[in-house]
Amino acid sequence: RKEVEQDPGPFNVPEGATVAFNCTYSNSASQSFFWYRQDCRKEPKLLMSVYSSGNEDGRFTAQLNRASQYISLLIRDSKLSDSATYLCVLRDDKIIFGKGTRLHILP
Amino acid sequence: GAGVSQSPSNKVTEKGKDVELRCDPISGHTALYWYRQSLGQGLEFLIYFQGNSAPDKSGLPSDRFSAERTGGSVSTLTIQRTQQEDSAVYLCASSQTANTEAFFGQGTRLTVV
Image (cartoon, rainbow over all chains, first blue to last red; front, side, top):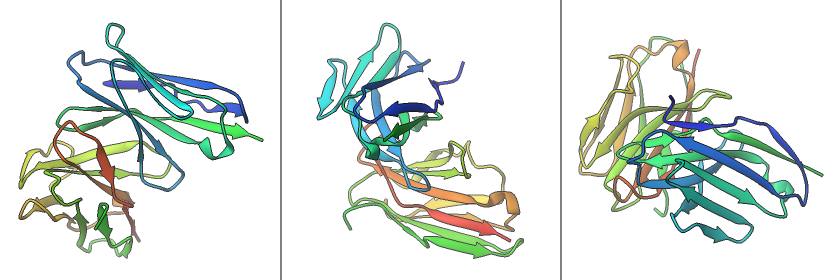
């Protein structure tokens, strides 16, 4: 089983809709979780950390479910500028990336 | 500087030449990482440093690749006798400690012709 698994998509979503991604991980000892976004031909950029209690940053909500070993990202009222690849990331000594989920917001 | 800085931003080299890529991490960050990404592909781990030591070199593709970090700051990734399959974007990231948020530089786009 891969360390981090994500649905590669693409998710084609109309502007204004709500979209959610999940990511599953195999190492139950993983402690730190993050979502990054990567635009085409750009470096990954930190979107938000993911905490056990769940956390929200504007239109973005991240959740961690340790029992089922998955994290999720919810984007509300999606904007055209949200179009990107969203990377699920675990931290131990290395930075462990999922392959990413591609999101296209349609006008 | 405020962020991770990589140089050069672009490098075109002839097959068989050596190249050196540089990464300046965020000041005070003890952990430094090198990844590479081919067009349309995911991120491939190369090596990471904690301070000046490299506990995990498992991602280096061959013995043509080496990296060092001095003074707990700047790191260089050296590729000897470059091959066309080395063409990729080489990304550097740093974090304050091993489990905290990591921040990426803009990468070096290497093209081997």
